[in-house]
Image 1 (cartoon, one colour):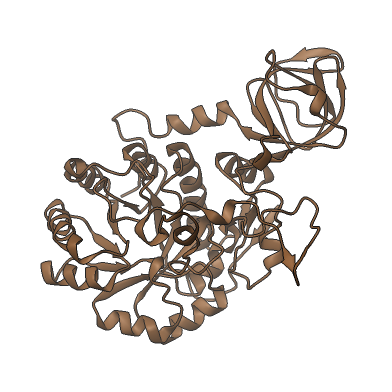
Image 2: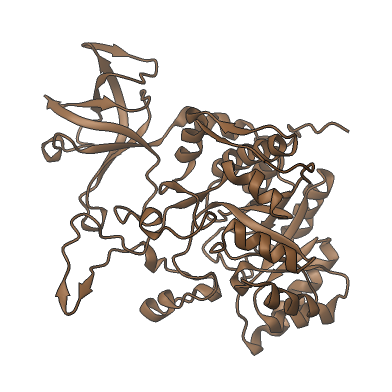
Length: 435
């Protein structure tokens, strides 16, 4: 059990909870699960997640109408570097955003910032984390240019955030959950250099998630299974919410415009609870089962990122770069066509699993569990301890390639997915807020 509580004497001011909306379903999931604001990009481009489905330009008024009805703000990401010959297109988007009632735009490019200010003196502008504003001095400079809020780089610690808070009155927003970059936000040129796809144009190829070899003084270093040398674990700071609020953060942001609507629903509802609990002066506690539910939506392994300072070895174990979900247990034998597993958490029919293997070499195996046996008996209810035998569909897993001690991970729980989808399905509002 994790337990973090605020030690401040003064009541905490509730920060805004921002959730990602990679498409319309994600926006609905955010609204129904407690987001105060959503941020999104348009299919016209000029946002840092070109691979997301994004929102069609003609549906922007519809989205803002949905958000306005539910008292949720909508922030439009126009946060890529822009070429001069594209400024006319950006201007058209900004004018349409003003007409649709967008609450703010996020920008990286100073030219786009000046364009927005020229189009509308009233439309709030937020500095994207891509701007890499890491000090009070540069934030004050951005404020003079018309920035109302700064999305802080994920590389800052809570102590550094508090120091910035003491140097400026501008609104500060911090990421609390999701993927981390190995480089300073907005400063990574690796994707552009290796593959011609610029992260500052929304086309990151995620070079940090690839395998690498370490060479020292011309000699290859044997690191064993440690091959993902640049791939950080994911940020998960639910237990640090009281400290972030006390540091003066105005908004807490969930990363994930490339994630599913179920992910948005799951993570948003947990951080809604964490914020409300912290503001009420109660300790933020999530039982292990709740944390597992978050991991099942997406997890490369949870960490506090840089919020408590630098610990690079803890942040980058180097063993994997993919979604791993929850550690299920270890293989203890193969019996006919069944795999015997010593459990560390629960499993049931229909759950998705993956066995440890070299993903880069295509040696990773995974499948849905067809049947679960314990004590020679087929069981339908979840089993959370002891030893079980897992059966898979014909040919789904080559059991001859498995070995004793091999780790196995639970990557999907269809029952959880169905439960999460029910929170935002349909056209009728589900979330009720006391007036």
